Amino acid sequence: MRNFTVGDFDFALPPELIAQHPAAERSGSRLLDGTGPHPVDRVFHELPQLLEPGDLLVFNDTKVVKARLFGEKPTGGKVELLIERVLQGHEAVAHMKVSKKPPVGTTLAMQGGFSATLQGRWPDDDGPLFRFALSDDPYALMERHGHVPLPPYVEHSDTADDVRRYQTVFAKHPGAVAAPTAALHFDEALLARLDARGVQRASVTLHVGAGTFQPVKVDNIAEHRMHSEWYDVPQTTQQAIAQTRERGGRVVAVGTTTVRTLESWALTGQASGDTSIYITPGFEFRVIDRLVTNFHLPRSTLLMLVSAFAGYDRIMSLYLHAIAGHYRFFSYGDAMLLARSASHA
Image 1 (cartoon, rainbow, N blue to C red):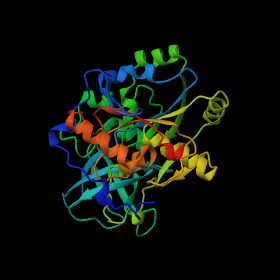
Image 2: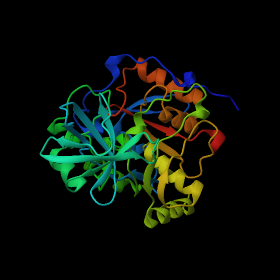
Image 3: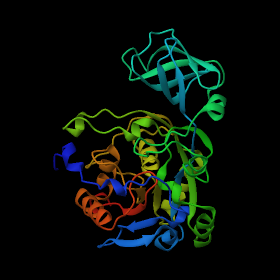
């Protein structure tokens, strides 16, 4: 087994290929079909013909919340909070961007007229995040006063179009600070065509955290510490997967968050809870047969995950093809369809 370093997952990406806005139509994005011996350039609305009746598409039905909040310290210094998780009793866990961290007990005056009082770090005294007590229900405050937490590489402020398009058409359970971006390509017309094709559908929930954009900063990838996210695999989805297996169908994960959810469930036997699963080459996949995914950041855990799934050399070749073909990268970009590497079959 090859010993990978983070440098193995680096690649040069022309900045102009980083998508700043979504395609005019969700299913009008490009789709790089990487399931055969040679890459094939397609359009996303061709997906139904690439699947078989009896296959099962599994989506992440998390809903992005307007998690970015702005305010100021009593000294007048500017503060930006990114709510990562809502706790009990109006408390929330957040990333805090500020020039100088305020002491515990400081009450921040937030835009919109509410307050946030710093309770300490989270999940422990050395934790990377911060726990705040808000003056009202966190979900209600985010909906009224928050901003769409667009990824750091999207260079414009959020607009009404982002409110609509940085959200899947089947988003259901609020709690994510990043969209499950592979699912952004699905619209109602495409879902109807998949139904007509006989492709089954099921859902899981994983509330995507900001850590999904965190680069790997250690050379030895085994030393990287993954962020934790909450997930749930409903009983109906567990049954749908079992029935798919019985009829000889394939489980097709839509997005890396769905992969992490299903493989966490398979690995631990826990249908719900927190996961910090870290999937790198050599990982033994137990559930997934096909993967719909976007193009990921260099040196990221997501690039490691798709390399583990489809094979490192295969992925790097497909990425070179995508760059040469001017595919659009990252959250608002184009997609690819991958098959599980023969070594995992």
